[in-house]
Length: 293
Ligand code: NDP
Image 1 (cartoon, rainbow, N blue to C red):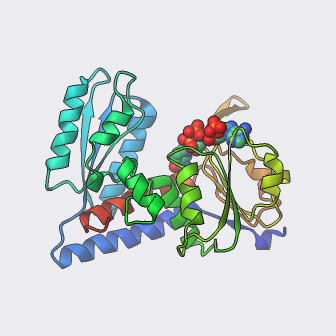
Image 2 (cartoon, protein in one colour; image 1 turned 30 degrees about the vertical axis):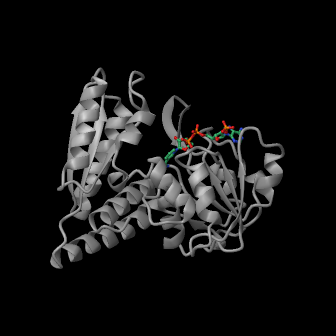
Image 3 (cartoon, protein in one colour; image 1 turned 180 degrees about the vertical axis):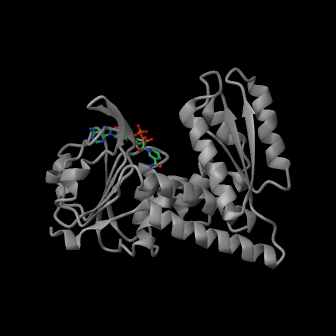
């Protein structure tokens, strides 16, 4: 593959373009009498990564002209108090959507919390009602990472129809939903999808036949370029912290340096899917504010 044929799927450029689109839509909405979208976030405890994710989401809201509210609780919060806060957000008319940042401390069931969120405000798209709506192709809040991947593909005009997509990983937040979305009869779908996981035999063979690879494994640089089909498009969802030469850095699930020698397009890590995930949440909040779920 010559470098002229290679496309870096730059999440920075794509997210900036989508954020500008969202900012305009929200501003135009206000001009025709809609209210400014308002996202609330619940953060339990002070886990640095969770705090950083939530801070990023609040900053994104400011950037696109949304209102935001952050509710913080200590790690030893009583379940009842948390449930009460969720109930209050469900009832607040001025809040369009909210998220409960995961993971939660062990004494609180994430499943119970997700079920307590009003599906019409579940902008993370994790409530079973919204997952069901997504699977049926009904209007819904698509989980932020798969949504961000579809928006990235749209931004770079990468076709999916008729392509063989191999999704590596079957988590409820990434692998499973993106495999469903890519296979649906929609402009962003119509791919032929193979979903592989840790029990799959012949992973390399599957990947060698993939026009589009979505890697969501959580293992640093697990997929080398030699496993890819020449010209493949690679969406690397993985975010893994590694120590190299005494320095800490982030790498994906795909070995970037060998992948760029074979693939036609690759997302960088960092600076790829992570930024688009944040766009997915903003899109869902805009939809919630405009009654478009
Ligand atoms: P999970 O741990 O929930 O799922 C990992 C999946 O990978 C599982 O389905 C597992 O299979 C599969 N897997 C593990 N080892 C192998 C293997 N050797 N071969 C094939 N499949 C394998 O992870 P997540 O989906 O939550 O996250 C995946 C990665 O993406 C992580 O690095 C995470 O940090 C990152 N991430 C990034 C986001 C972003 O915005 N960029 C958002 C969310 C996650 P099995 O089911 O059999 O165990």
